[in-house]
Amino acid sequence: MLPSRMFPYSMARGEHNSHPKDGQELLHTVQGYRGISLLSFPGKCLEKLMIGRLNYFLEATGQIPPQRYGFTAGRSTADAINAVTEFVRRDRKLGLKCCLVALDIAGAFNNAWHPGILVSLWDLKCPTNIYSIVKYFLQERNAHIRIEDDACSKRITRGCPQVSVSGPTLWNIIISDLMVL
Image (cartoon, helix red, strand yellow):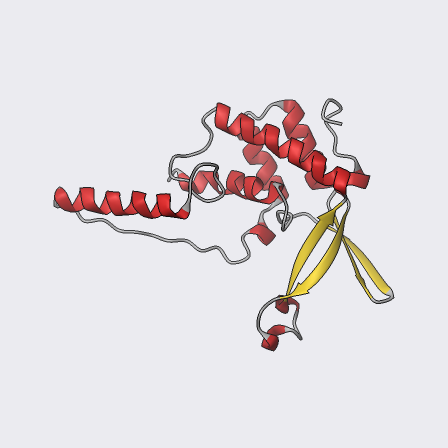
């Protein structure tokens, strides 16, 4: 599968389950539920291999900005707080003013646009074999939901799979340009 540069549809197909979020007041709306996509075991294994190779490429080629702390191996929230604290201390010693801008993107994982992820991978000069399997994985995404005797399927063109090994890496790829501003 990795040599053929494809992610078989049968492995990319996930069963979509809806779980209620905290707060009873939203249970009568779509926003009151969190969608979880469950891949098959072979699909999860292939996804992990794919993301392992992609992460290796990103690390080996220095594509991970030093300002990134979220979803990055060896870095934590405490490291991010330390970096900001040191930055402020250094600027205060020099008599400079500084400003902190914090960004919280509502529904970030749900709104990661698949073509944007692929353009970013292309711009990063991702090896063709890795690019192709990620492309196939994203293009063959479908959500399937069953409620009692009713079932529905829909093609997915945006969003990182929730509760997946690929979600954090795919999100980091799409947000990378913002990190180096």
